[in-house]
Image 1 (cartoon, rainbow, N blue to C red):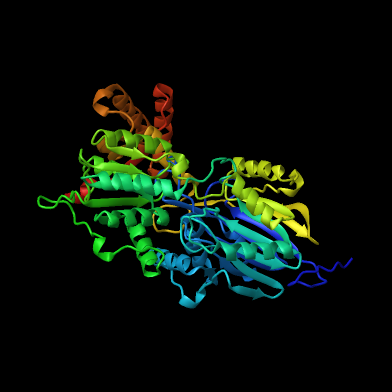
Image 2: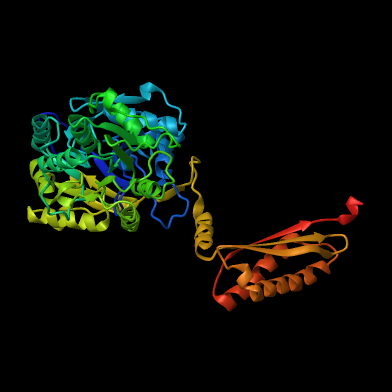
Amino acid sequence: MERRIKTSVFSFFIMSKINFIALGGVQENGKNLFLVEVDEKIFVLDCGLKYPTSDKYGVDVIVNDISYLVENINRVECVFLTHAHDDHIGGISHLIREKKLKVYGSKFTLAVLKDRLDEDEVEYRDEELEPVTSRTVLKFGDTTIRFFELSNNIPDSLGVAIGTTDGYVIYTSNFNFDQNSKIDYSHMFRSLAIFSKEGVLALLIDSLGASNEQSRGTILEFKLRITNLISQSNHRMIFSLFSSDILRIQQICNIAVENNKRIAILGIKTQKLIKNAIAMGYLKVPLEKLVNLRFIDDKNKNNDDDLIVIITGERHEPYYMLQRMARNIDRLIHLEKDDTVVILTNPYLGTEKMAAKTLDIVYHITSNIKQFSQNLLPDVDANREELKEMINILKPKYIIPVIGEYRHQYALRIVADCIGYKDDRVLIADNGDILSFENGKYVGITGDVPCGEIQIDGKAFKDIGDVVMRDRELLAEDGVILIVANINPRTKTVILGPEIITKGFIYAKENEEIINKMKEIFYQVSETFLQSKFINWSEYKTNLKNELSHYLYKEIRRNPIIIPVLISTDTSLFK
């Protein structure tokens, strides 16, 4: 049955079939990648990465399995990037390697993206990256795309509104209502009011701050604390920040300049970010106050009393840099007892132990350490009251919590319940679920698509795989044994060895009994294979590994990686 939707923009008789799919970014923190399918068109919202926890040995970053997008690449219209945080744009190189796509984002977001694509050696054309503003309107058949400004701790953040014949599907990405932000709130609220009036079918809303009941700390108190620290210091100061904290970097630079201090910003990624921000007018720092530090040597110590050092990075990197400085192995800064260290980085999930260890190491060098409380370093994500405000303005028919783990999604369900949304209107999804809407009504999870993680080591954009990760875990837990011997295939004798080398397993000199038993097992296995007419080297090595593994696990309950190195050596060839 036909039903006419009356709005100031949409007036159609045919309803859309709309699907929402998260390939990443729900029931986890990071690698945000959301798809909105309108009939046969696929719109991609963000394409981020996730940084590994300490148990992911050697993994640099984790991105999404995009096999579903690759299989349906002809239906993909474009990609919309909301802001320049790594968990929202860091996986775009992985996607563009598969297929050249049109990418839309703010000028600052695209400037940061270009640096990332160049770093990842991904080819692109400038016309493939199109800047948009809060006043941009894009048309894709019956679907209209609009944008709206958002307050964030990184410049030029935008939300995305996908206008369909059933109403808008709105994606807020990370946001807050920090009144100290320099965005045009009047224009943002006008945009949100228009979306609300025309009808919002589904709101894809940031859920990371849903359990946070604290009010947002005032920028005035933050500036006052920093001003007191810098104005009263007569020695070098070191500030620890995350690379995305552009607003806080700006505030520290302003106060440093007011107090006639020089500024050194460390971190290659942040230096590029700062360069873009200064060039585009988002960050204002007098160039004469910026210092490029030289490597420490006998004449240069980089320890001038008027120096403000801002160290930056992602997740664990600021802590790691502080540890290097405290241990005097950093090439630019060695911590000294007169230094003041100001830590403005609340630990991310999985970095709490490293943060605590860093404090302990730094305290051995200097006791002048200042840590700001949580209320002065509020999260970028909207708290409970700000989430309620966004929901009340837009009045969506359905709410889909995104960007957060299950506990955050569930906390948002409780927040929504406080303002009258029952459980059947708050849709908690898992990665890969297909949430379907027909005729403006949610019809349930109608299927799933492939999703997962690609673990990347170095620059190779290939999954290093479960087998490699299992080997790395074994190496970390039980170590490795190399058993090396030279075998004469003609005389069927062991002419040299075996030499047993252990790494991360046992100290050989203190465990001679175990080492001797391993050699005995080697000769027992060798005797069987060296009696054959032809030596089956593959089976020889396999049996050797199996017998040694069985003995070691039975004897000391350890399961190291065992690598037999059997070298075929015919000595008659050297005569």
